[in-house]
Image (tube, rainbow, N blue to C red; front, side, top):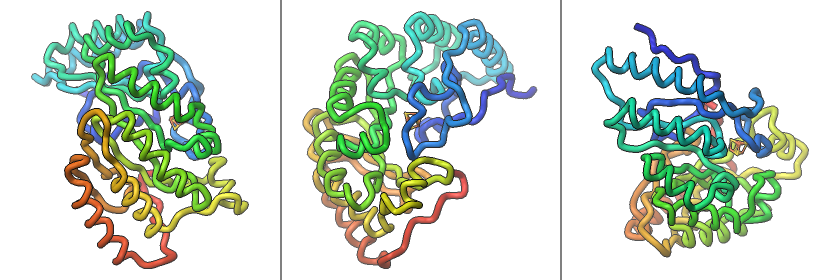
Length: 300
Ligand code: SF4
């Protein structure tokens, strides 16, 4: 029996949701402007009809039943599904709970704007129905860098949105992008990212390495020389300085840098493991030659 759902490709999910069952609630991304991102450029943003989402859920529940399997994790796609209205999210999440009672949690990509647009009561209601794991592509804490890449939200939005979901029972996984500001904004990118991560203390924190993907405005900036990319050594330097500065205000952070675009896997709990991670990074930096850039991963 073939898996019964047809996804509207391409579909993305965070590395830590690799085993999650995916359901598309929205198609594409409501922002779709970030200059470095080509994930959803082929898609026009829309919220799927509830009947279509429910049909996918019914078909997959029958499939899983036949396979004698009940998923523990489910992830709602696409790029910022928390932007879907409550009159879609609530019935969908209710049905998910009915069909998959063994589910431990539901994850979702969320922009700071999505978090700000939902009320405390709405976020709290969703969390009570196991939709309580938000993945925020913050990318940088720097207003200059966020503005440059047309992120659509600034530092204060990132802080306010993050604290809002946490206050309402969610766990937060925040992603920053090494090298995003190029050489010119590297120092500010480091300083302001430390500030936001310390202030918001996401339960999980990870890095991606910025790649100038052909066809993106970011790539054009690099091409015409208005943005200078960081070498591998400099990227590791950014990571080291950020980790060294992390003293989360609210709770420990589980840190990992294991995405396909990162050069090396690395992880630990912050602040306890700061020193050890910084030592590892120092030795990697010492061994890394000058002037070398990270290769573009084949899967990007
Ligand atoms: S919000 Fe995320 S998915 Fe949307 S364009 Fe920006 S990086 Fe891409």
